[in-house]
Length: 88
Image 1 (cartoon, rainbow, N blue to C red):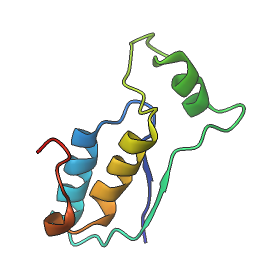
Image 2: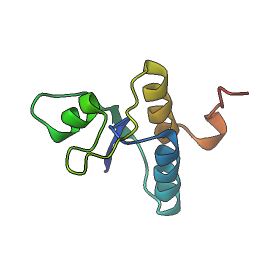
Image 3: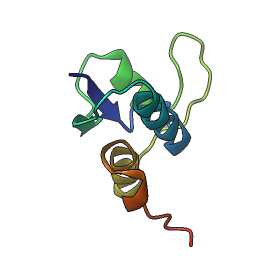
Image 4: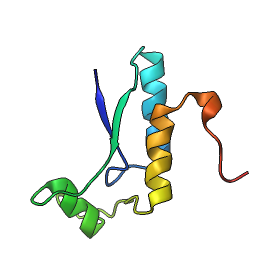
């Protein structure tokens, strides 16, 4: 059973939609998902606070608001008919 991390530094809603599509096309049931939580001493935490990939120094998108983090997680967990676009 795969375990997914939503709202990881560098991920966008589009990335979550691509992941959901991949899982659907390959018969992967998405059930275990958590929102990224920074933990000391990890590369992911450095990315979260710096807003860049420390290996390449490339700027990355970092989901920071509760809404965006929740939306990324919901994209993976909900069925397509349950996903509501907040933009109208």
